[in-house]
Length: 347
Ligand code: FNR
Ligand code: 8K6
Image (cartoon, rainbow, N blue to C red; front, side, top):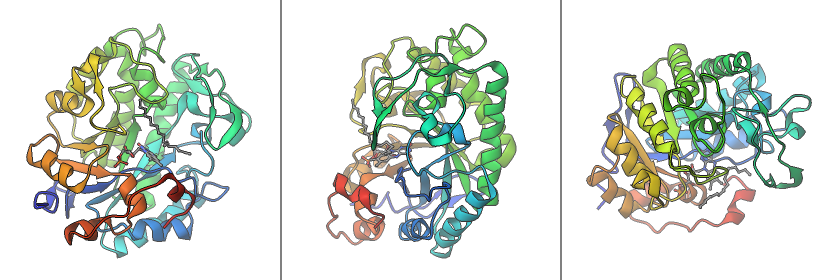
């Protein structure tokens, strides 16, 4: 039943995955107060090392990229050293791990980083309050200047270098789920009138500059990119968005990347302006390796791979509930059901 899931996959000359199951990036808010990964996190990830590739929880590239409590960073030596413990534990257990590089843009809150502006493509805020910190109202961000955009691109590349220094096998650029890079890619959050706004090629510019800088820093074979062409989280849909992603994906076809990864909670969601599912839309335009995600069980994942809807499948919540997800699926043991209470602890 699960033969495709357990086939190895040669991603490129530097990376061969033991199976097609990725552990999806899962924010757990368990780093210490200096945003340094802990020993508990190292064992949590090591317990999941039999997945083909672990994508780490989203990890901030610099202080003003933080929008949730105790999310780890990759911008100072203590954080690099903390991550070294994680990557060593995963490697000792036979696994591979990429760092997910994150800046939340307008979803940031100065509560976490002290003085300084909340930066975004345009001065358009989101409604509501920070999860788990219900008294913190989101602020209207400041439109990033071109000099600030340059610095952001540089800081993604720097965090990617830090990730390699920390022993990661590669990085996934978090370009999804309504955070900074995604904010440039959607009309609802990008109303700039300079070369980063208004037209598809301008709106894709920041994402492509980040990709190029990170690829230059660590090599494209070690770089993945997560994208959400469908607006569904902290983002309003706009029919014009499709042209931006059409352009972006056509440009990505000319680059060497390890994979593109769909950013979605439920793969079955359909978007009128994409003509259906986000994963099918990306598959129709992007020629490289595609990672699907969102609500898959072992048998639906197996079917999606067999149908070549994507090449790899990422599993999120079931991995929170089942550290031994891969061995359970392999030996056809029942899985423990996920529930939100499990977020309180790293089992
Ligand atoms: C997520 N997801 C997520 N995505 C991401 O790109 N970076 C992240 O840090 C997180 N964090 C996160 C935390 C929690 C608690 C959940 C439930 C989800 C989304 C995740 O990677 C995945 O796309 C979804 O969970 C859908 O997959 P499953 O859970 O249905 O297999
Ligand atoms: C506390 C930090 C958590 C940060 C990561 C986000 C994960 C939280 C889950 C949110 C679920 C949002 C799903 C949105 C689906 C919308 C469907 C229309």
